[in-house]
Image 1 (tube, rainbow, N blue to C red):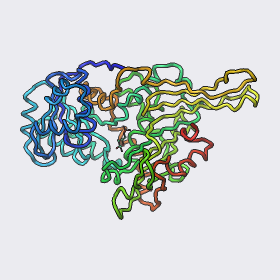
Image 2: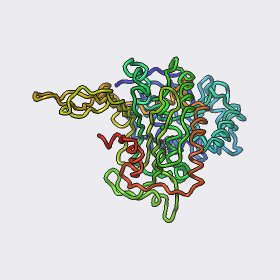
Image 3: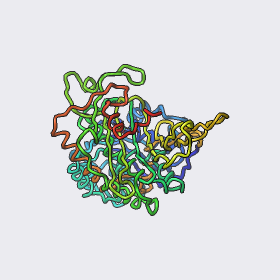
Image 4: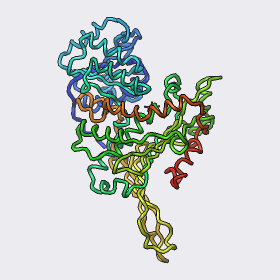
Length: 488
Ligand code: BG6
C-alpha cells in the first residue's frame, strides 16, 4: 500500500514531555514517518520541552538512540533530526517562557501544536502558562492524552482548566484507537457499503463482542496503572469508542460534529451497569506464561508485599437502550497478560428463522462478521456453504476473508499517531473526543467504579497467558453464547 501523502501546512509541534516514553515510542516515530513520506513542509519544527537541561545536540543524540531503529534512509533521518530542538522548562512552575516564545516567533505563520504528553495533573497548569506567555492564539491547538481525569468530577475540572485558555475547537483529546486504520475502516464498512446497514440492528444481530486483549503486563507503568485499572485505562476510552462506532446511527456527513453528535447519543443510551456477576467481572493476573516465557503475577510486578484490588482484566455485558439495539448485548472484555495480543469486533447475526435442511446436513451456524483491528488487520465473514462432493448435502461454516495486508500489499500501514498528529495540523477533529463524549463515558462508569472501590471484593484471579477468569466465560455462556476464540 502506498499512502497518499498530501503535505500539510507548515507547523511547529511543541511536545511537553518530549523526553518521555510516549514521545520517544510513539510521537517522534510518527512524525518521522510522515516526514520521510514528504508530508512535513521544510520549515516545520519540533520542540521538546522537559525539565531536563539539554541542548539540541544532546536531544538529537537521545532521539538517535531511542528512535533511530525507525530510520529507513540517512537523508530523511538527517532532515528529521534537523527539525528537533529541546528547551528545558519546568512547565508547571513559574519558569521563563520567553525562550520558547522567541523560538516560535522566529518563523511566523506556522500552525502551532502544543502536545501535552505529561501527567494529566499538568494539563491545567501548562495551559495556563501557555495563555500567560501569549502562546494560546486562536489558531493554536492543544492535544491532550488520556486519561482525562479518573472520574467525572476530575475530568470536568481538567476540561474546565483547558477550556479557560483554549476553545473546544482548539482542543484535541486523543484516543489513539480512533487513528487505527481498521477502526476507520469500520466506518467505511458500515457507510460505504449498502450490504450491512439494513441488517445492522436488533432485528438481525444477536449480539456484539468487543475484545482488546494484550499479552503485556505493567511495562514499567505501575504507578499509573495501579491507580487506574482496566476500566479506566481501556474501557472508558478505547472500548467505548469502538462500541460507539459499531452502534451509532449514520451521521449526515463524515464531519467532526456530525460523527461526534451520533457517538454521544450512543454513550447517553448506555444502560447502567449492574454490579453483579451477570454484568461485570473484574480479574487480576497471577504468575503464568506469556509469549512462551514465565512471567510474574500482578502483585509481584508491583513489588514485594504490595496489596492491590486493581483489575487488570474486565468483562462487561452492556445494553444500549434505543430502538436499534434494544435487547442486543454488547459483551466487552479487555485485559493484560492474556493468551494473545488481539483486538477484534465480532458481530454475531441471528440464526436463520427456519431451516429447510435435513438433520443429516449438519447444524446451521449463524453468520458472524469478525473485524480484526490488530494484528493481521482484516475482515472475515463466516458463511454457511455446502461442502463439495457427492453423497448428500452437508453444510459447513466457511470464512470469507479480507486481509488488508494482502488487499493493499506493498507498504506499511501508518501507525495511529501518524494520522492523528497530521489531523491536528489540518485542524480536523473528527477522530478526537469531544468534551461531552469524555464526560458521558465517565458518567456511565462512575457509579460502577465507586461501588467497587467502596466494597471489599477482590478481583478474580486468572493465570497469566489465559483468557481471563473463568467467571468471564460464565458471563457470556450463561446467555447461551461463547467468546469468539473459544468457538474458533
Ligand atoms: C493505552 C493504555 O491507551 O493503550 C495501555 O494506556 C495499553 O495500557 C495501550 O497497553 C494499548 O494500545 P495498543 O495500540 O497497543 O493496542
